[in-house]
Length: 402
Image 1: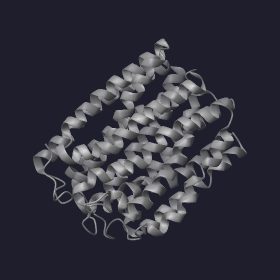
Image 2: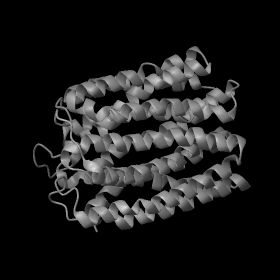
Image 3: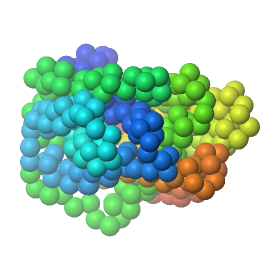
Image 4: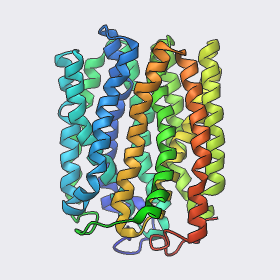
């Protein structure tokens, strides 16, 4: 992901970064608007709470399958063309949700949107860092993260509030916004994001890649569960939207800015602080739901939101550092599959647990245990990179991680 020319000013001055940011932000807006809204709308149409999360699950299952084959697409096809295709597939079908509330129809549209969402996420995650200097990769990843975090903060909460107030039609219409950002496509570098030849990363490299993606998977399991459970917890539209807004706001700020910190001091202490905050946040959120204490719920949502956002930037940086530069498309694909696979699993599985077994508090507590266990296992990634200096080809001006 070496930049074509040195750049010492603001990364926002790079036209390609602005263009990819706009297309990524629009795509994530479409996704986020329906993330909590679709389950709530399906529930209002008479579907049981134990199955409404599967709508998100179907979309993200297709997303993950597409992402796992996307490294080859990124090596063979134009970066610009892939972003255009992803925007069309994600945005155009969204208003069609209004045609029917039958599950098969919701599944079908969500599957098509899942293909578009997969393409946008894997391409943008690599295109923005590619356009930046190598030694500012963490900062560039933070900009990509901001394109996702703003929608997660505003659109997730807004979509839920609109739906709970009977305005899902507006959500469906706004979900077509990726089509509007096609005007930014001419500023995207058409060059494919990798060489035409397939690049193997070997079993050791694959393990280093799977560990940060595994940590992200578990964190997003808890996140997918949280955004599915909170709108169904009887808090009312205002209470649910406020909790999701706090959650998304904390995630946005931390995901955007934490790359500056890791560029300077590395990942270890940042990772440990995020891990502790995430486990504590899920415990507080579970307690808030159990006791009906909204202040505790909001505090937990903020703490876990910081982890949810920060871990995305940290684990993507670790994933890129774990493989040689030609393997970056594979790193982006696996990382994004971990993100969306976790969100799907959380919406479906923790949504099921909340609706039929332990309730919302039990589901969030289960998510907290999983984050703690997998987070500790994920420390092996940082240790391995520290011991071998992996990723040096991507960070030639950056010191070895602590």
